[in-house]
Image (tube, rainbow, N blue to C red; front, side, top):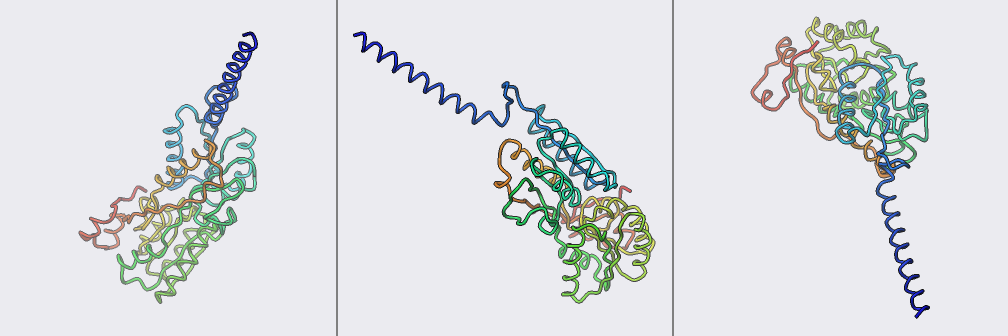
Length: 337
């Protein structure tokens, strides 16, 4: 009887230990991503970095922060840094965020993402608004990600914007392509524009700038030789839209652009991206990665929804008729310069 009792006790103890082990393992697997070692809720530290201050980039940053707070609540600390158009500050901003032990970096725009990528190979990076991540050297493939970087691309439909320009103003014979030569995203898109215009047999002239102080002179020089301007979602130009619009309006020619925010700032029209949606999509990817989803399971994503947007103030000024079709199919905005 004594031996049987001892065996029974051993069996019960064995079952209790097994159950405890299973429970402990299960608890560790489900809670390790959201709790700290002492069992408290983890607070994620997120660094958002902007290269400059302008409407498109601010829309993205605000949407990222809003979505992070909506999904993570009090369990997220958001640090927003802005280089204010001083590229030399971006390196020190990245180093500062790394030293603050952020859990993830979210650089906005191509140049910002490139600097983030050279700063750390350990902290996850989710870029936003990078039009050509392969050409920028951030990833080797859009369909497969390795290392510590991925993100959301904002590649715009260049051909559709040119078609829109010709629909609204069939008399265009020559386009003025104005962009920042140092922005990889702009150079890639302008090559697409030139190839498409060549196929259509439409002439174009190029004007490039390196900073906003050159915009007025370059735009003025082009304005006398072209029938319309085309500028993609170029960050430098977008930050100086009032100057650009002033030159174009004095010459009486439209500006077709790559972002809805640039239309609000006085551009004529676009088939463009909703940057609030882009920011939300970026935040959703960042949240997945913060919660443990590996970079390799999160290839680069793209925005797939575009809207036709027209500035009614500019359309009236330029004599573009707002037909019923345009009113029914376009997003109508006014200038907010």
